[in-house]
Length: 303
Picture 1 (cartoon, rainbow, N blue to C red):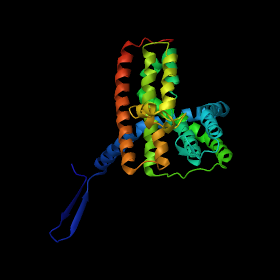
Picture 2 (picture 1 turned 90 degrees about the horizontal axis):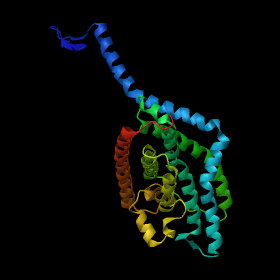
Picture 3 (picture 1 turned 135 degrees about the vertical axis):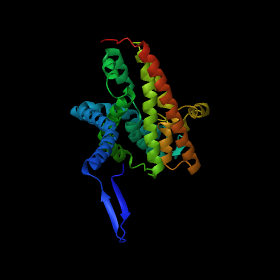
Picture 4 (picture 1 turned 45 degrees about the horizontal axis):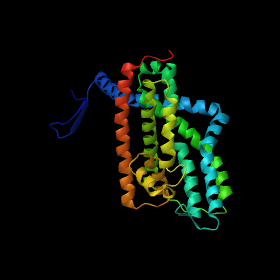
């Protein structure tokens, strides 16, 4: 039943009729209810994000130590490269200012992109906390996505002063220009999502075995090298650099760095973004499959 009608009187005047208030109230209540339900999931994610963000800043010293531990290798390696190259202007296939820029950008992006939440997820399963998550009205994958974003955001905020210090140390060498295009920011968001999806899949191994520590450590060996976090891919042997193109690691760190440094053409950037999306979809499907199979045989370790 319509709540209003527009008509023409015999005199030629327009008549606009509004039906009774209860009808209008029920209609608008339904609209408001639909809007509230659509905002509901976002409220949950925002609440989870806020909880873990507060937890990170509750122990800022411990969080900063984790940030420093993650960044120390990339902070030291430029000095090692410069010391071993002597007076050479080209280092690891890049000019000296480009090398410094590469490591500085990589250090900053790593704080936001590289996901280490697999350890927390695996321990949730090991200690039995996973059982409580199965009863909650939000999927475990989405819960940890908000949880991971809180930790990534905290690490990025805490690292920015340290990044300024590194810049002051290496400023005498010089830096190369960077280009903050929208493609770059999209590549960073996709890289973060890709890193999380891959880490979530790895953490699901804890549903089958309690001895997951070695498996998770093994994941970081190819990740550190093939993602370009430790060494630029241009410094790796040809076969290793070629191997990285067939893995998702390359698109978690090296690709966004190349985009912001302007090393790729427009077609290469678009190709890289598409590959990132394909890898994300692959790991999301794989994560759902592993999760469903793992839950069927999960026995509540430690609960």
